[in-house]
Length: 326
Image 1 (cartoon, rainbow, N blue to C red):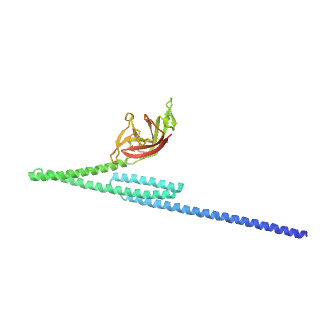
Image 2: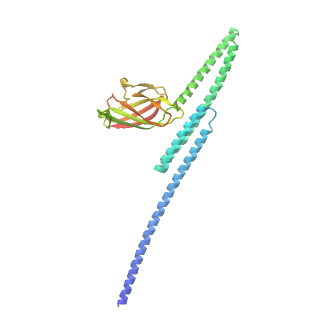
């Protein structure tokens, strides 16, 4: 009887062990499937990231090669091409960060398309400048040749002199067109030499009795605004004094403007329309990346709400920043 009971106990323990083994096996099977799914998901994600990066590298290389193919003997155009290449490189690095750090593929893919479009614009701009240079060279050669011929005809008859006068008028028109082309080239060169700005920040402060600044966020407590930014390197711009026009737009959409404190008007280089600015600053540009801070001692009342800062250099908008005062 005792032997039969012992046998039953052994069978029961065996059944329990089998059940536990089956449960453990089932658990491990489920976990293994989860792990396989995670690995498959990771492989898909890695493949998508790699494909996006490969497309970026290909499009960037094509863009750089297209610009390099346009280089020639004109040093000004070569300098402009190098500046364009630097801008494309900065865009590429930004997109690479989006791909591998932020993993925002849709945004990265959209930025890749923007890079391609920007590269096409750069190529078209260089081709246009080359064509204009060729026109200027040809027209200048013709002008010099025509002038020589005119000097040879000074002793001709009155009828011939009349004809010469007509030719002079024609030359004047050519010269006028040359001046227009020259102005266009100057405008493009001026735009290319604009100092780019980055990391713009605006903070409000009050001034203590000891002259130190105290950080304030409420409009009614602010006595000065401190405007800081990074002046970025521009190979085309020469080191020296640079003028920056600060334009602060209030919550009502109007420019903070007071001629008694330095406000004025500048023409926008894009369309030559007059533009109000809040304050003008002269800043020394070393030709290298450098942080600068400007102090605006406000004599204009500030109110609560959103503000917008615009910074202009050589008549072109080179940086913006939005901030809010409580």
